[in-house]
Image 1: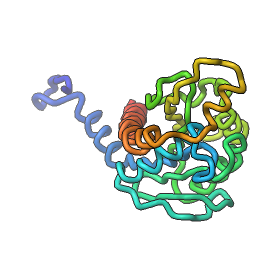
Image 2: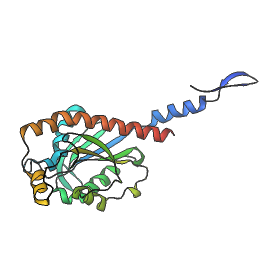
Image 3: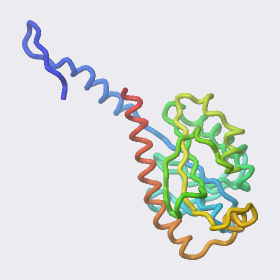
Image 4: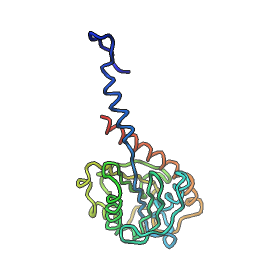
Length: 225
């Protein structure tokens, strides 16, 4: 509540101007999100490493977005769903070389919208976290050996876009009992089961939508402060 103070004309609220400023900010705040999933291309590589792609398949329905269709973005043909707030894109490249595509897609959408209203969100798989667990992750957190994240960071620096929030949404895919490189590689690259696909396409997208809402709330609060 605004704090009240008195002057010679009677009681006024010293917080009214601040309240009106917040209302003006809310009226002007029109965020747009470029949400890019990382993974190996579907349907050829239907593995846990492509969890982000499966999740975006379901996210179109949760967000009531148009269906994916092939478009040219970032100078490559890819699957895109354009909505009023979200542009969902499945990276068409192999995971380990995602960076140049993501950078190109970001630069393309920057030409269409004001940078201060744009946010980039990567959706990707993450070992160690329980299967289906969804976390909003700081952009600058270590890639922890995730070559897709490493590639994107090598191609796109957030420092050049200080007014645009960058974030990551990580989807847990668990981890095999054995920790040697060959076993882990098979685990993330083997074909997923029908139940795993169901969870990624029907359950995880609801959690992602909530994380996107959290990100938007944090962004609004930062602007207001």
